Image (cartoon, rainbow, N blue to C red; front, top):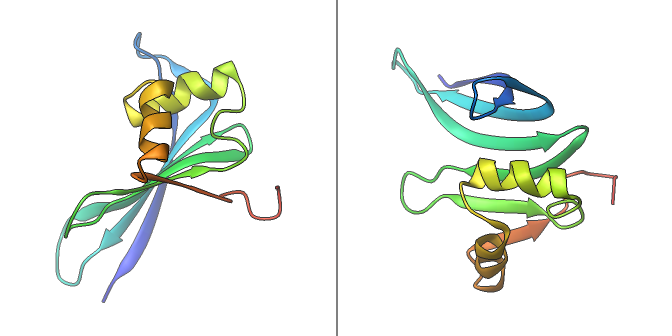
Length: 111
């Protein structure tokens, strides 16, 4: 039997402080008989908007989606998206152009 577990945490600054309004949502999948959880998906949410989602793929590279309307919305969004993806905006733009990252509507009904 499989079950899921959600964990929501504030992003943490380099000084170890919780960053208000910037969240990482981790979805865990419990595999049958296994005592531990494995991360299935991580989502970055800024205020009320989902900005980016990374879905783990045990058979290959992770699948990265960025919200087509909000991924580069503001300086603050870009700062924390870069922290979440561990790369700068220019690298993210390159990966979008190369088809490594996908643009999608991650905020259903909001754009």
